[in-house]
Image (cartoon, rainbow, N blue to C red; front, top):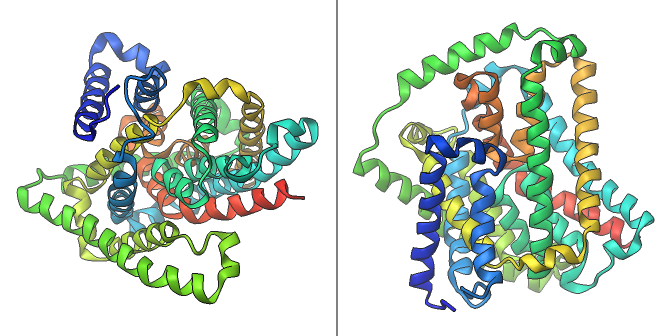
Length: 409
């Protein structure tokens, strides 16, 4: 068993490098359309941990990565929020995105209630094994992404066994839904007729995106990387400092807030870091997105995903297959709400697909779905996913409180 954290970190980065190198090879492209790289970033470390090759539970990598790289990751993702371009996308893109968010927020409690009525044993549990705690991490993942998922894990503290189970449900259901959306991209004309929508605006967006990419993209310098590191870790340091002031004050003076996790120091670290990123997105520092702010954030995110994966016990997944039923009901509620809203408001299927995947899958898969319509539209998926990162922790937190209420009815 490998227990040295320096060796573990090197091994995880070599695994990540191997995954992305293999995914770029022509002969492997079909494999990676079925099995996405992000899934392997979870799965391979999980296999090593389950087989006893590494000691994920005893490693200090995850506590360090979650406290330092995760807040920096959220800052770098939200830094690139282009509010002007979001307005140019028009209200329909945001409506579709927020309808998807509403579907996740309502779908979680409803799915928990439905499955709880039909099969109470599925939702049974106490302490850290309370099912709603694990499902809270899916809410964070399906509204924002992996960073928000980790934030809610640290806030609500599901057991490692429960978290392993819900991560499997998260990935499986999300990938099935992405396959449905990509399939729909091949029938977009017929689907737009069903929604009675006009998609000529999509072509205008496509042309604007191509021009923006050509105009603003530049090769980053050493100075740029230093600025990005200073912003990411400077904001992280400030968030930690503020949390150290806020948390003891609330614990001492308002102990009743503990049941809402408002006395959790990690909640305030993530909340403040995300707010700093949003604030910086309306400043001149937003231009650092053109030199790779979100790409550096993605690097941090994949390291985070690998450290989460190495704590997974894959043998625990089969112990509660009823959780898969919760995930399927949840995604069906999400689909019903976003389809109904888009049908009612005549929103093109492109915005439905990208808005939904910006919630369920995050920036990587949202850009894949957008590119399935046209490669130059991929940044639209990223842009909407960044909005998901900005609201993911907050909306996921509210969803978790609703699921907590349902589970204790």
